[in-house]
Image (tube, rainbow, N blue to C red; front, side, top):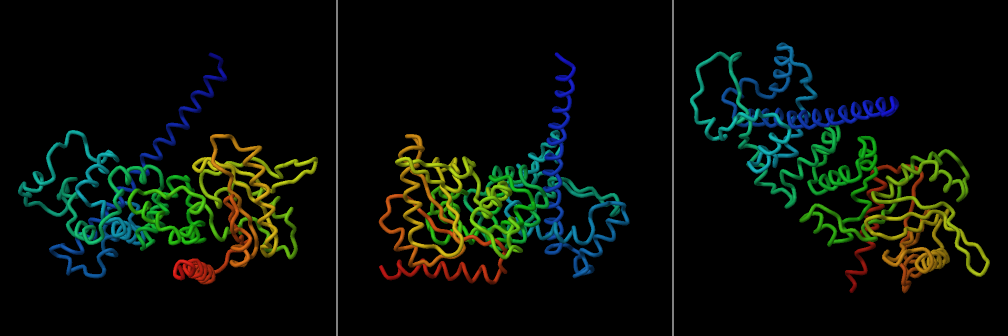
Length: 407
């Protein structure tokens, strides 16, 4: 073995170990935070002397913990722990919490007594400072269990799911997630954060840009049902395409005039951010992909491959409003890709035309009757207000429901 390999090997092992330790610490702290929050909630509901502290409970608790020299339990942290437990009451269930405790290795292996067995033992008369709380006692949260029964979990949210969630995302991720009151919406972002390995910054961006609404789950009832029952989205082009695509990271908003080439170059310069906006499983193939027919060259702006759909994704960039001839051009590209580029085992290519504006009727007439799957989506180079985006999405959903009502 050469010295350089020895040095590299030790460096790799050290880095790998640090990552493993960091993940283990994160899992333990996440579960600790939930337990503390759950314990506070339980005391608020069933504490014998809770009336003496009233609404000042958390403030008093923060001060007393500080007096004991216990760091990390400031007022804001304790409130966050409580909110975390309220958002995830199903962790209190007997089929989940003990497995999470064991998963985080909070309980010594020599502890073998059952929860009920430990709690049947008579507590000794000791001072407050000498009180010892067993882990078994911390596993009983009737208030949260009652809350969980009133709000049944999604069918796939079991101990294994929460183990995966805690092992993948950080406490900071979970703190953002627990602020989402809609449980299906929160579960969507949980799944996307795990599958796409989102950083905290990227997850916040997707939440602020209303990814859940933009994917249009309400337009595909099968996708909603599958997400509810199985914890995954239906993999189809319809659920893959977003509208609009938010491209504020390009920095083009300050420029009064730009061309399609400028837009394409900006997307290449920010390829990582663009692929995150497109969604998981996209693989970049080529820019300005050339297609030659009868000695005439044609160029597709961007070509990607989607692993889950197992097909090529052609993206054509257009400034301004959608025109009907754009659909014919994209259909030409898709026919060429299907016959000359795609492998026999792959699914037919999918086309996305990105425009600044589009008229629904023009899109419908331009794409009707085409054999290829072709979609027209809008892009925004500046982030709109939440109210504007919500209104846009509401109008789009109402328009999409009209043909169904007339049929």
